[in-house]
Amino acid sequence: MKKFDYVIKDEIGIHARPAGLLVKEAKKYESKIVITKDGKSAEATKLIAVMSLGVKCGQTITVEATGPDEDAACEGIEKFLSEHL
Image (cartoon, rainbow, N blue to C red; front, side, top):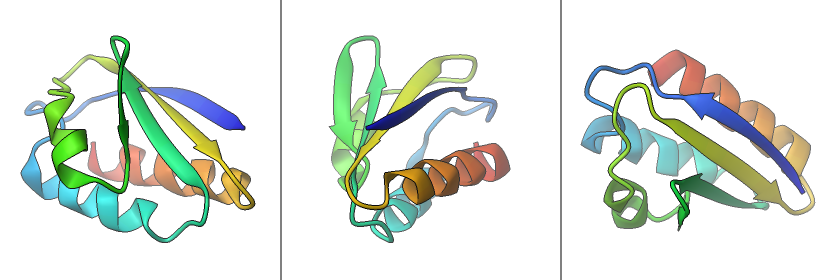
């Protein structure tokens, strides 16, 4: 299991467009990727679940990857977040 924290910088937070792109990115990996905010978790491959977290600008999320390519999954998701959110 690998995990990291990330502070959302997008002024709208995780809204529909980047959430859709995040799901697409997460589906590239075999590992299970889970996003957690304030004790609520969502699988990164499920758009509605990610949107339901209601992540706003300035809030911290924890991304956790578990599986055969967890290192690559964490790297890829962290890169995606820094570029889009």
